[in-house]
Image (tube, rainbow, N blue to C red; front, side):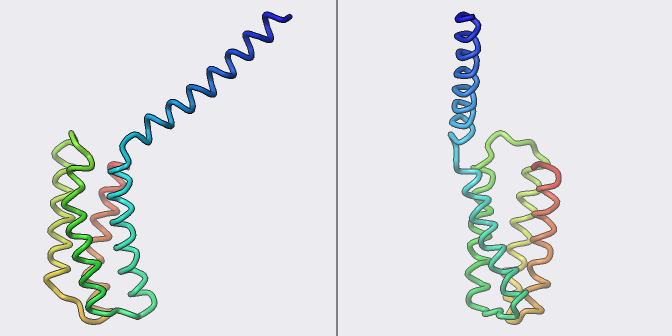
Length: 129
């Protein structure tokens, strides 16, 4: 009886240690999550501005600039990815650059400018998430 309890206790401790180790290994590189979080923040701020109809041109330009700069970090955040993923990154960069070049001054223009960015993000997340 004592041996069975010790074996069961050893298995439980082993499972708990394995879960801790797996979580630690998964969190080893926070860069990909950080890049996506920053992009989500700026894209969310732009979407929120359109929803609330408070589209300040200067703020919109700042968020679009940060999206563009952060999209350049995606390939570094996900090293060793295949060519279709790199093509999606390039598409996102191009769409963001086009939105920034359009310099949306009102909510209608901002909504039109960020729509292709959102579609590109959605497409990539559907394929690679």
